[in-house]
Length: 96
Image (cartoon, rainbow, N blue to C red; front, side, top):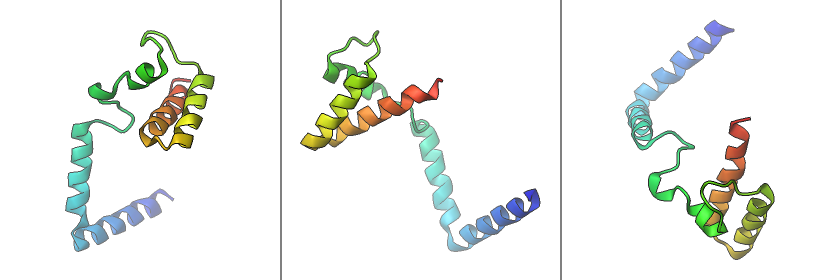
């Protein structure tokens, strides 16, 4: 099973190298590492949801309030708030 995975990974890498995609993929991965891992919030974006919700940064926002804000944002078409609330709901599960 492990050998099959290694062989398929090697085969995929060879295909990517032949098509010139490997350089682009490597560059993309390096850029992602420089920018920060997915799930990391930029300094400029930290605390925006707290401001929108009117909750102090030192306190946690109740789940019900986040879900209500998400529903209101979906209804109004505010994509940024929908993303922020979805992230907040998902991030709650990470430390459990």
